[in-house]
Figure 1 (cartoon, rainbow over the protein chains, first blue to last red):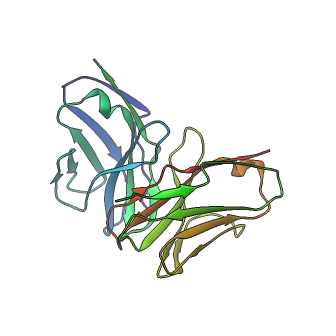
Figure 2: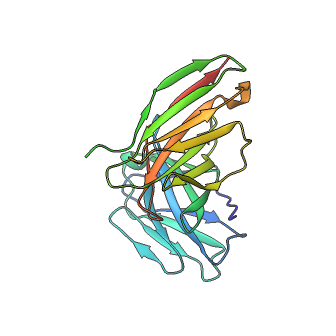
Figure 3: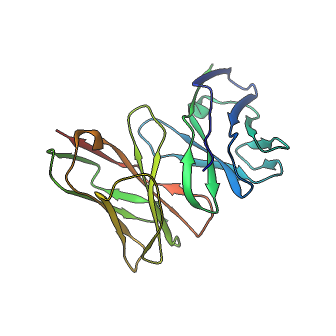
Length: 109
Length: 111
């Protein structure tokens, strides 16, 4: 199982880029790296995932270290609606998802 | 298109009782996973169902059991409730191994 560590909290100014780090030192070669975010009183929401290469979608970018021991979720321009708890997780072929402790992102206007 | 729905929204039970939580997956999804989320913590994986079989299980005791029906909906059963079972129970659906879509959860309080 991929065990992950994340900073407890981070702060960003609105419309500035945000880099959210995650360490997953025990990740296996077949574990995908997923990122989800959770707003208050809601279930987690999928953000992005990848295996080895950097990934981009309409919400964010995912940068994966060459040794896959860490990854960074990049929000290019933070908005107030991006304030949430962000979780990284390891996924072994869609089974046995292991969430990290989560980073609470605050976005300042 | 309705997303993942869960019922009930809130539930209060007494220690030692049994509880059943229900989940309807997003249309077109065939895989359902259940998670337990204690206050202030990340979700913890309980188990996953695919083709009406439990495919994978996290580190939870046998008091936690589940079922998936032919229409892909699912139930989570917890027997002999303990105070520590109080949590938000999340259901997530997916199509095979693709990204998961989560429901709003069921808040279970055990007194």
